[in-house]
Image 1 (cartoon, rainbow, N blue to C red):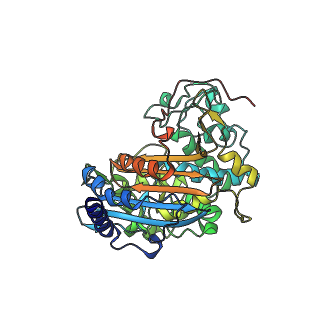
Image 2 (spheres, rainbow, N blue to C red):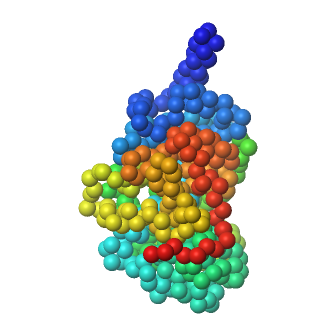
Image 3 (cartoon, helix red, strand yellow):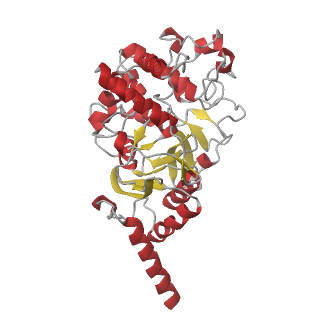
Length: 415
């Protein structure tokens, strides 16, 4: 008994240390929510120390509402800047399902046809001649069945699809980036402007953004490797763009991909000569907090009222339903933007992210149960930490943690 009492006392002391500076919304702990236990939280500081991980930001959803959030650690180890619940992290590839949501809304509004070849709308000039490329649709981009590589390289051939569109699974950021350019072309607006008006503003998100601006730069966490601050090339270039915004008087939020390409050419002395800029893109450049991203997951939940600006219920269900099979038994599939995993407690939707091994992130939700957990980190060991947190929260060791993003082809799902 004495040993147990001493252990619990030590755990409480460590938990109090970790909670220092937290907001009031981090205190309530509904029993049914996917919130890490007190003992697990007490051990999180030690895990972060062993993993040399500067910061972790966690938010949990219960009964379709964000009920708990907490942030541990430093946003900049060199300056000893403490991260808070309002610190922005790079969501990395978790950018994709957020953009997919808006694409599905635009499809409902008849701006884009998910089954029409994207090349009929807009075809980037850096793509090589290819009949396969010319047949790729938005639906195939959203389900990662376009055949395009994750990212192309310096030669036109590096963009060639590896299979006939729609016949297999291959994770592709390149497809999402092309779809972004199509949406910009059709709407006559830049990515940030589209996302703000169609999603972020209606949902009431204050800080979530696809680009760094003078308004949010001070809230942006730095990325780390092996616990040390590393060069931040993306941040440096985007901060350089902020000066162009001030001089030119045109907000970054209104820039299209063509505007970013032009700006980078102007700011890089003898530098970027490519026809694209990946620093602001639908596949990987989202900046957000765990709380605001958790609010985004609530849009996929059952049993909640919906606004007129949201996607229809049938579209929402399709987004988190199997569209492209990855395992033979169908236990792990891909929907329209999210991975979809069948478990003993129901179907989970999930997505992870990794930007340059400096920001590692993960979100998982249970639409029927109305639960979700979002974990954002700013270091290369972040995946080891978020896996521990999500296993404990959901009770599952997710297949998504192991998923091969370029697996051998499987036969298509039956109708």
